[in-house]
View 1 (cartoon, rainbow, N blue to C red):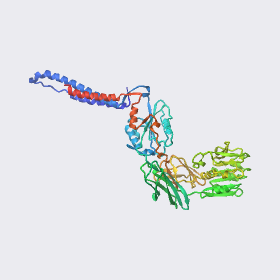
View 2 (view 1 turned 30 degrees about the vertical axis):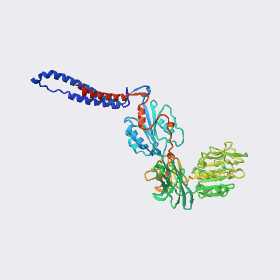
View 3 (view 1 turned 180 degrees about the vertical axis):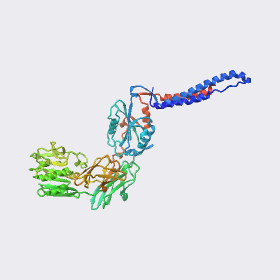
View 4 (view 1 turned 135 degrees about the horizontal axis):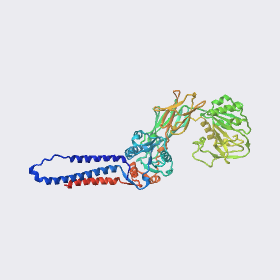
Length: 632
């Protein structure tokens, strides 16, 4: 017979209590016999013998009852197979995503699950527990009580594939029986089948169910238009139920209320517009009042200082199509003939376009190479007859007079981010009359029908494998030219957005210059973070990632001075509130932590004996009562 909680067997020391009481009652006293009661002496002897038997029987019953109670709490069992006795490793995943804010029948799902774990887990149970953003290895409930009670909701969300793989990596003992417990509301916002990726690992699921899932969300905000010093800001909202009353939407800047409006949500969608004067950059917050999930009730935004993207085109052919593309307020555009180029302009540009230059002198190629090394972008549109391109990385320029059609788009390339709502196959693709014989196509963007590259990227250089003049190609008239050329320039200097997403990789250009030993930091009222950064001639490129976990407005600081502001918000996928059904999750599903722990105590490979010892304790207590009442 084995015990799940052998430490409790120290409770058998309580057997000393009835024994001590019994011995106290057996103390001997001096006897004085009187002559007038001498004839009762045989009767007294007989009665004392009966009392001794009664006391020993009572002691035995009491001791047996105490022993049975102690052994029952130690949970004895008999193994039915070898699977019951080996060492067991347990990993517990406790979901602390924002959807766990919702209330179940016992309050907030995450807070209730935390209290249940801390209350129900055995004191001596060693386990590994992890959430979306924290890991506690080989711990017990006493060691992590304070951390769990103070833990907050996480903007980072693990998929259930990631949960299982992470749990498997934390269970590192090869010969131990491995067990994973997943406690979550089991959202299925991706519409995927619940994964079962692990072999020889027991997985138990505890599904926590919210009672109310009604929720209104601020989804996004963006600038619709800008005229003079005013911007038209559009905010989009959504709900997962029919909202009968208008929703009040407020906009504040630096904690001062700027505007308030009512939004009517129809077909679970709504939108509102704010007309705002921007004499100074806005560091604002858009918010609503809603009883559902709280994280999507506000959206932080900052307009920042407008920065024009500097674009220079050096032209050996007609540049009208480039002049039309870059004439907007977003760009500081200069167009020059190849014989009139001022080399001193190049170092100040964000992007330079070589438009069918017949010759690239060494002095120009040196400046272009400096530009790309310092973070600028170069676009090469080669001429039919040309020289000097080898010095900027394009070798073996020789054309084939063969007609080809551009038929394949790399939809995953950053140039096409947000351009297409869906992948299309019946697009009006452009064609060309001649192409280069060879090209270094490591990162293809557009391809011909034979799989060779029409446009590719090599480091900071974009290369067309043909000239774009109207005699050779109709690409200038293709719908593709606008997103391709426009996004090349936009990506040359990542323009500051209204906000960025937390737990994502964001490349942000800050319009400032720093010395070699100086750094840029981001700070708010409670914390300061130094992001990864790279300094160029005209700007500093900072990269934010998982170091940001709290939504809000952040100051960009250089030399202890605030130079800009950035806003960060959580992804909205956690508020979809679409769940796996019980059938999707399978048979290893429990409705509560109580049910799970009882289920684990009744594993099929062991015979639990604690219930029999409980019955034994009741039997001996009844025996004690009968002895006290009927034994004379």
